[in-house]
Amino acid sequence: MPVKIDLDPKKKAVLISVAILLFTFFVCFNIASAHAKKRELIKRRVSDISKRIVLRQDIEKIDKIKQEYARFFYDGIDQQALRSFVLSAASESNVSIVSAKPRERENLGPFSKESVDLSFTCAFNDLGLFIARIEGTPMITKIESLSIQGDSGYNEASVSASRPLAKDYKPDDNVSVAMVVAGYSISG
Image 1: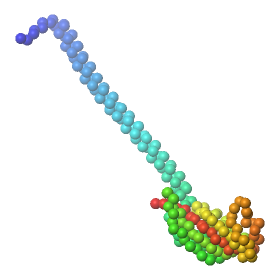
Image 2 (image 1 turned 60 degrees about the vertical axis):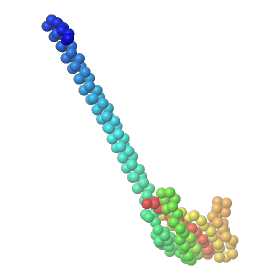
Image 3 (image 1 turned 30 degrees about the vertical axis):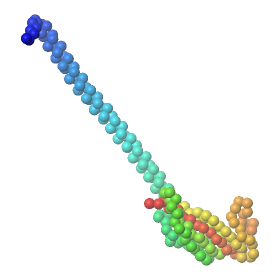
Image 4 (image 1 turned 45 degrees about the vertical axis):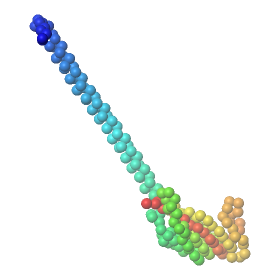
């Protein structure tokens, strides 16, 4: 049997008002909670996008720095390019190349190294000019080894801090030289 509650109209109005207020409060609370969740999600997305933008800017800075330094490496150097450079430096320095033998390419992480074994003759002074031309290029080129034999009976001399070459040879002395020259490029 249904329970009958007899309330006067004032109490009914108060109860209905309280019920409407509670219903309105719960609806507004749920709406506010949903908006708070959306706001947090939007904040995370904005934060992620901001991080991506900063990361892109950092990558662009790194690419600019890489391009700045990449100009000092040979552009995909091959044996022919390195030998051409060495031969032109030799002809400008009065150096007579006897042989130029390529070595195998070495991969050094992100870099590649091409080397050439050289044998040549020249005046001792011209050797200095030749080395200056090779070392003076803006490209990364390195003389890895150098060995000198004098034509007038001097013993073999190797470059070292304890034995400077200038004491062993006069400027016009003819010398036979063995040298390894390497050029570096950025791989891939």
